[in-house]
Image (cartoon, rainbow, N blue to C red; front, side, top):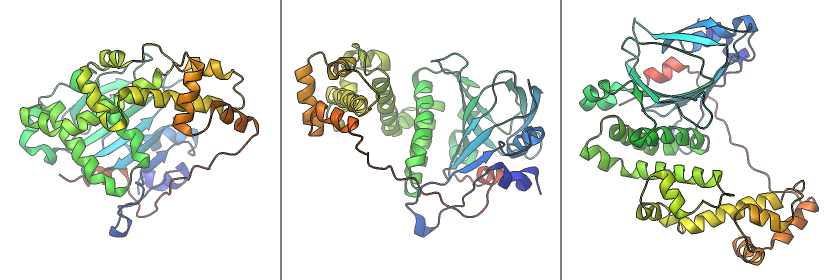
Length: 358
């Protein structure tokens, strides 16, 4: 029995098996592993054993005893997405691909950049080919891609550069991975086939682009661009430059393409206004926020108080002062239901990776 098998329970790993036919629309149940509950002297060994099916990991330097880390593994049938959080500064690690009986998958890796607000290039390589790396990244997102899924274009995948810049199609691919990670906790097993197919077409278009692959990838490319636009909007709700023209510049797309993206959401201008009103509602519903209603309105781009009040009432059916009064009265909000977690057959990272299907 491996170190992980012996320590998984006390380390806080929660595992779920593959869904059956009766659970076709159940919430996805990821594999979780954490070293937090292990004795500090055993934490790195536990981490090493958990990822031993993918790389041989060594700890070069560490400022203190212990290696508190955790990994979440999402089994998507044809792909696996893993999200790892590890100690950063001072914890220098080195790793190499396995030389014997490697899992013959490609891996697409998104590292957390050491520069705030910037992303490092995507890493792309085959687990079956020699590779040595080193780093102290705190967070790593990895998509495992089975070779058989792209048998017809494997030569193009093998010829792809090991570092894919965060621009153009590479930037869209990075955005897609981050978006997928955020959305997976809200997805069900019924969503998996569509997610896998969208991932396949997007990878084909970005790693081995051709006229056909770009046509097939239009839908996931549009969804990824829309998700990126939403994030830009959310991060700039109080900015006067948050306009359709400003969005076009940031996203690098035409005005007509931007309008098509938001066509089913009532239009981009309408969407921006709604997000600003939702942010204003959040501030008004916070009893600790002592700003006047006019100040809150101005903070989210509404220079005219009466126009803000009309837009607010039209959106929510009550006035800004009603929202403020309810917050000060301490009226409770509706509870958010918790996601149900499935239980089932024990799995590990290697089992998931070897079970990926073309």
